[in-house]
Image (cartoon, rainbow, N blue to C red; front, side, top):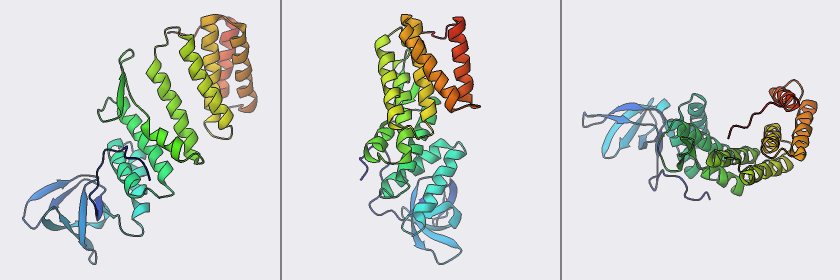
Length: 272
């Protein structure tokens, strides 16, 4: 079971979920706006349109705006709708549906991916300055960020999922946002560097590995520019050469080549 980290509260026996904003005319002849994530009860599904009950009002809606959570296909339909909204950049709708999915289908094989994209939706909304539980503000750089609670659930509860490395990658990035600007703090930078090194050691076969490796090279270079230690310079060059060798003809190799060129010519990148 997933801990109660999500704000959404479902009714004790939900019947069906509205998956797209829709106008609803009930038998009281009043118009209502039903929003993505609202719950209704299906009274009759034998006709071309669902006969539904919303609060105490009865009416009908097209089938394509409702997912019956108790049907055999509901789990799959809800997951598809959720991911579709995320892919279309409608992060509020995606988050709303993924929250419900994560609570209602907490034994689903899709759950690690659903949680990851829920975290990604929160990340996207935080970057826009939206306000909701879990959003923090780094006042020094005037940047909002999501605190990463969902990613921690993935790392803790699903250690063997392919989305665990992705979640851990996001958590290290969140750590950086929390601690900028560095103000020449070797201790903070070294702590983040240790996180990237541990990531590379644990997840060498993942898509995120080369990105993490690039971050280790970058931080070694930052530490060199602060301390002027040849050990950090040599470590940075070795990492960048590894990227060039193992990941040629990629953007990561291009960055590595530029880093080595700038280290050779004495250019500075550290700005904090």
